[in-house]
Length: 351
Image 1 (cartoon, rainbow, N blue to C red):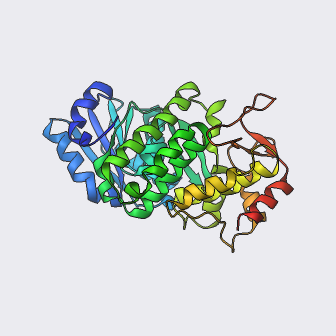
Image 2 (image 1 turned 120 degrees about the vertical axis):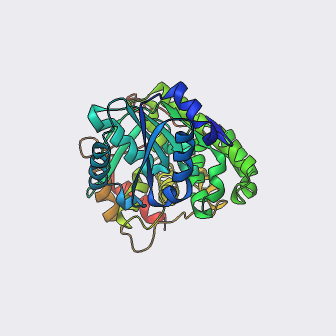
C-alpha cells in the first residue's frame, strides 16, 4: 500500500493483513527517535500489545550479532509464536528485522513499514531478508514474505536529501531493466523529487514499486526473471564492502549500474549509448557514477567472486540490452557469465 497518512491506519490494516497477539516493532536508533513512540502509541491506543526493539543505525550493524541481540530481546519479552514483527525503517532494518522474523521460533509473521525512498521502492518488496558477513553483503538470510508492506509517503519528509537521491538509484534501476516509461516519468519529475515534493514522491513510489512487485510475484524465489533486479548490484555490493560502507547503498548501486552498463556494451549484450543514458539519468539526481580512484579493480573482482549470483566461481551479471529491457539468453538464464578480463576493463573505464 502506498499513500499519505497510512501509519495512522496501522491497527486496522494489521488486523486485516497481519493479526497477532503482540507486535515487536524493530527500528534502528535514528528511526526509533523519529517514529518509534508514534507507532507504539498508535498501536497501544487501539488496544494492541506492542514493544519497541532497537539496534544501532548503519549498514555495518546489519550483522549476525545484531540478529542475535534482537532475537534474545524478543525472547526476554516473551514474544510468542502468536506474535509478529514490524520492520520500521529503511532497507537495513527490513533485511535485519525480516531475518529475525524468518528465524524466530522457526518463523513468525511480519510486516514492512518502510520510511526511506529506497526501502519503499525496492528493499521492502519481495521477502529477501538477511545480514552481512565479513565475506560480503547478504550472504546469510532467507526468503520470508511480509504480510503487508505499508509505504506512508509522509515519512519521507524527514528523509535527508542524500537518502532521497539514493532511493532514486533503485527507481532508475527498475526503469532500465523493465519500464523505459518510468525513466521518462522520474526524469520529468526530477526537480520536484529532489525538492521532496510529496506528490511527486508518491507518484514515483507507486509506479516504481509496482515494477518490482510484478517481477517478484512471477518469480518469488529468484529462480528466473527476478534476477534482472540485480542489475548494478554485483559491482555495487563490492564497492560498498570495499569502501567500508562509506557510500549509501543507492550510491554504490548507481556506480554499479554505470560499470555494468559499460560491461554490457563492451561484450555486445547492450546497444551503444546505454551506459551514457544510465549515467545521465543518475547524474540528474546527483548520484556518483565513477568508482573511487583508491578502489582497485582487482579488489572488486575478488569480492564479486563471493557474490550470491556467482556460480561455479564464474562471474555472472544481470545486464540490460536496452532501456527497459533485459534479454533472456540462449541457455534460458537471465544473467550472463563474463570473462574476468572483460570485467576489469569495464571497471577501469568507470573512473
